[in-house]
Image 1 (tube, one colour):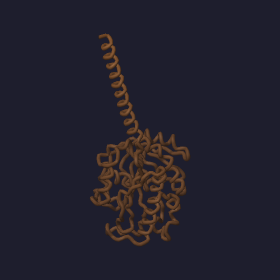
Image 2 (tube, rainbow, N blue to C red):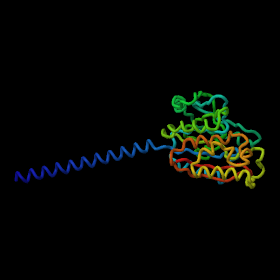
Image 3 (tube, helix red, strand yellow):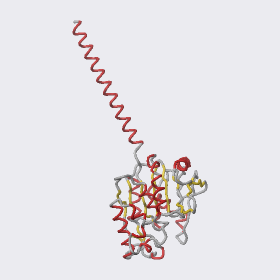
Image 4 (tube, helix red, strand yellow):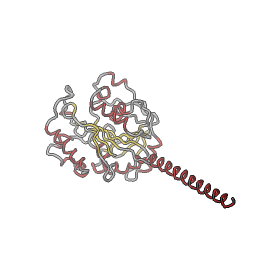
Length: 297
């Protein structure tokens, strides 16, 4: 009887030890899953935003924006680098707690000027960015609102305006390589769950746009440049995209000024080694306005 009792006791001890090990393993697995979830690197995207009219349109482009917003992991905040916030000899960041809606366009229907995108700002993340970026001093801007390169896009992606948004200006006195390198420095924000959006257009020549026809056919120089950009995006060839004026013989027609092109270089700077690039939308509006959009990660 004593031997049998000892045997049962040992069996129970072994069972409890096995159970404890199983519980510990389960806890470790759950902890690992939570850690991986918290440290997941947020994708980064480039949006060809086109005309402000897209904010009130239901078309293939705006449906692609809505689909993208629904499918992405929910961001902790959104940083927008827009063609419509240019600075000179300095880089600025918005630390506004409640950014207003900027109507930085003219001649459009009254309904556009009544739209308000009421997202909160992200001053804490803006301050962290100022402290973390070492290559350039970033200046706080406590009065900056959201320009239409930001809110006309976000209105479709996150219509509830329930995610904090802040913006970074582009120092137009700097060469393309500077913007690419600065983009790379912002990787830590992706690791904090921040969705970084570059908002511009790959082909943007206001003098060659047909405002009267949304679906007019693009001219050969516009198609050629957009195709050359795609070819280099597909092969992860960033250097030719930084030296964009050598891409095609008519590159200067496609990019007469680089304010709309540079936001793409920030997103390319954020691409990790062998990190996947996928397209969210492609096509043209108003003849020669490339609406190509893509996602990193």
